[in-house]
Image 1: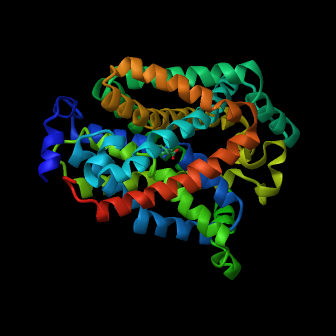
Image 2: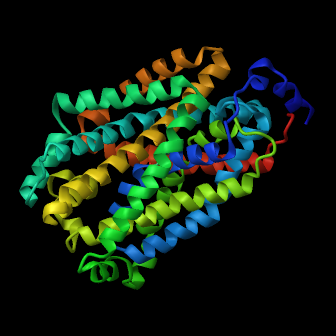
Image 3: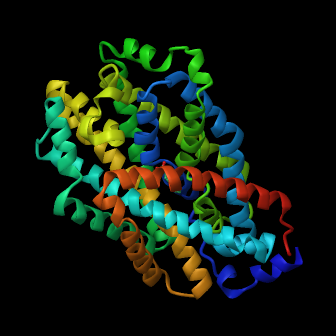
Length: 408
Ligand code: PHE
């Protein structure tokens, strides 16, 4: 422990700002976890088929791997009170430095494409508010193409990153915590309202049964479903990117970590399941074949608008509520992704928070350009960074926690 005591007494570590309250921290951590992964990733994968097998495997992954790893990330951050880069070195020694670097790298890359999708969500919200809703499949395809192209897309992308940088620049307590304190409760209220409404649609029971309750032996042996369930669990909880290490580093010693981690896990999973309950009745049967031009991102931007539009009068209002809550969820996750490289640069280079936030957001903007220009590249980087790399770095982190000797 001696070595760690030394690092703890370094000026930047002891001057580290704490969270304003336990609740504030839990909401911020839940804000990091709850994001487009829940609203878009989970529903899309359920829609692809294999609903029941996928959901069960996902829940197993969350409980068996996600929760312990979330706890491990928080513990690593709190114990060292360091950014994700220096926390790994403090616990495991110099050999773990590459893992330390992987965290800011992967979170910045993810932030780049995440901001692209967040920009689409914001534009979809704007479109509904202006009364522009697609009414048929061709219209829905065109709607998505319009969101995801042109100058409007680039401007939305820039604004999302600027907003993210502004929140992070304002500080952990004043920026991140303050945003989460109102946006998470607002999101939960909207979500609950939408679930009640969606579950009471006439053919909801039949749709649930078809999408979620079909038992097919072949699904359980499908390694693709297994892999997707595990990568969904990692991405959705925001593990493997160092975000929880960064958030944990501002935690006080007395916080009951297992309880906090359990609440965050439950909130994240609960929101994901609620999103599934909202979206399933909206999608006409076999939506996987209906993605049209939007390809894999179809669920959120093609099937959902179409589903809302088919509801007549209440449709636009409900869709506005859905895309508003998706924007909130996305921004709090983007903020967590940016906090990782920002914490590293502040810790490592001694830069001020504001300067670091704006310059790392600029780097993320550059890294996200390929995803901005081509949706297939966006999906490819999500598969690679949001899937394989997150899982690999999460598992490496658990090795570090098992093998690392504090004080080395
Ligand atoms: N968990 C977020 C989501 O579900 C994404 C995220 C990944 C956030 C990694 C932080 C770190 O959308």
